[in-house]
Amino acid sequence: MLSITTDYATDHGDPEPYLRAIAEAGFTHIHWCHHWRADFLYADAEIEQIGRWLKQYGLILNDVHGSEGIEKFWYSPKEYARQAGVELVKNRLDFAARLGADAIVMHVYPDTVAPNLRPYNEIAWAQLRRTLDELEPYARERGVTIAIENLIDSVGIHAGAVALPDAADNFDRIEALFSLYAADFLTHCYDSGHAHLGYDRMERLDPIKERLTVLHLHDNDGSGDQHRLLFQDTIQWERLASLIAQSGYTKPISMEVSMRHSGIDDEAEFLRQAFETGTRFAKMVAQHQDGQ
Image (tube, rainbow, N blue to C red):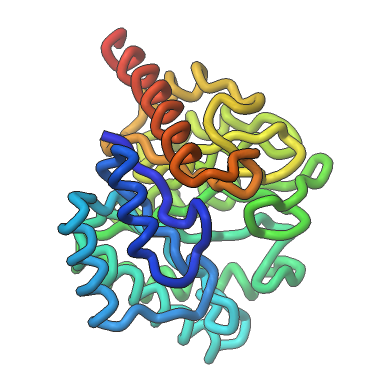
């Protein structure tokens, strides 16, 4: 079993051709990543149709990339925008629950970054706490956790962003949140590419690995968020396999790779190589689990 993100080519438009191609390449699971940073709200009809496509192609929803929103920002200092952002996150929690996923991924920025890249301040932290307090009962009722993704301060916040020298990361903020909220509400999404930007941060996964519920696996050379195929660049995959094997993660290995910086123009070939490298890594994790 293996999972891949739905936005390997684009994160908007009709998702059906990509779901079909993912299934044809042999994947059994998907990480839903369409509209991951937008104010887009999924209507009932859209959720129902996506469910029909998943059934048609024999795909299982591993997890969902929630949207932090743009104008509807989930911890905006502007209260009306924060409230709108809460509704946006609830929409993704409903999406996940209705289609069988157990987690949605959300962004909490490093201390140097805040909503729409404004300087971080305690108002933003207070707004984040207010949002999480409001979302906790809603998420619990649906059996879906919010997985906080590790991020760094970078030039741009999308695939291809450039790493700043000695950039701050958000692991301290993640650990602070985990001290305040239980593991059946707040979990962790480990992004291997983000942890490799500027310098290697893989050791920061170790203290929180029991909360690991979502994987964003991709490779880069440390200079930018390139979302390349596994084993294409310089991440220490054997070391990461060992950490994942020791973690609380129990779902299929999941990759957040993109054609954009892969050097592969043919979609079918890209998916073939993604499946091949993902399978290789999954076997590494399994070997570490067997050796425990």
